[in-house]
Amino acid sequence: MSGFFKNIRGDKVLWVVVVILSIFSLLAVYSSTGTLAYRKQGGNTEYYLLKHFIIVCFGFVLMVLVHRIRHTYFSRISQVALIIAVILLIVTLFFGSTINDASRSIMVPFLNLTFQSSDFAKLALIMYTARILSKKQDQIKDFKTAFLPIMWPILLVCALILPENFSTAAMLFGTCLVLMFIGRVNIRYIFSLIGTGMLTLAVVIALVMITKPDQGRVHTWKNRIDAFMNGEPGSEGYQVEQSKIAIATGGVFGKMPGKSTQRNFLPHPYSDFIYAIIIEEYGFIGGILLVLLYLIILFRGTRIVVKSPGNFGAFLAIGVSFSLVFQAMINMAVAVNLFPVTGQPLPLVSMGGTSIWFTSIAIGIILSVSREIENPKPASLEDGTPQA
Image 1 (cartoon, rainbow, N blue to C red):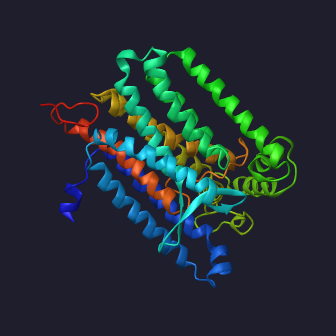
Image 2 (image 1 turned 90 degrees about the horizontal axis):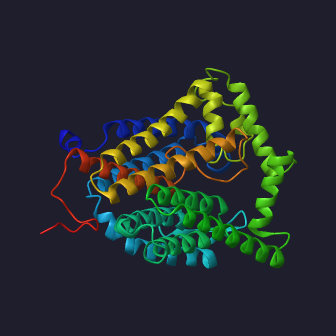
Image 3 (image 1 turned 135 degrees about the vertical axis):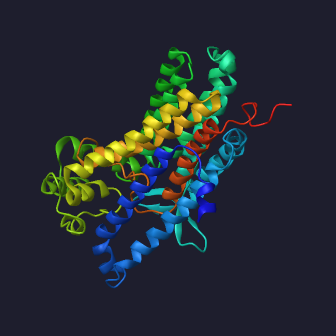
């Protein structure tokens, strides 16, 4: 055991936050899957807890393994990862399993788990964007030599994700814009990219509305926005109402663990709306604590940026940190009815398989950068090749 802990490096505060979030996750998932267990597992309430525990433990193993990799190697990895991501997104778009009118996932053979290619694509694009930004700093204000090589991968990946998962595409696009702003890209070019992205979205919506006016993802987006703006009845409105009841009855200190009643009424209390269950059982105090934990992740990521000796490590750490926290804030905003329903899980907390694993890999990448700061190695090039 002592040998294992000797292999743990990096930001200690971030490790503590990960452990606390994992504990939150196990408690909340066990509490919120009771109804699901009676419906699908004959009342075996330990089934989903054990499955989730194994997934979380494997995620922790992935985190440890990834954080041991020297962060500069992710620069080279990103080149291959981006190509694989584009291929997977195309395969998923045309051949992926359909869930709620969306072809978002591919079944992983033998594991009985769905693989969401967008989770892989997010990491690949952030790593690749960090790589290009770090390599183009000397010409970063130039349109042809710097902006275009950064812009095309962003538009391509987001456009492939967009038809079936608008919220993920929008969050990834926003993360890349933040990275470009931090990377000193000309602000006029950033606004032109925003305009291009909005035009692409308009074209996609127009095409879908012409071919499938009363079905598909655009129809789902419309229903969710209508439910949010006008409080119209429907599945989305019902979910939000039940979530609001859970939050309202939680009070300051909550009903205590395992005492939730709205878990029996919320369609997805263990994933999309797990934050509402946490507030119901742990109260306002628990809800605020969860927000603070994610803000700590962002703060520690920013701290790594300030201390990072290289551009790539700085861009990588802030890009991955911002992406995780951005997703968490969107999930929590949906639960408290500040944002339309998106279907985004709460990172490291919601029940899931590959989503938890990719989140663990993302945190491992942040820890890898922080480990290099604590234990600096000989100077290296930005692509991970040691200098002679």
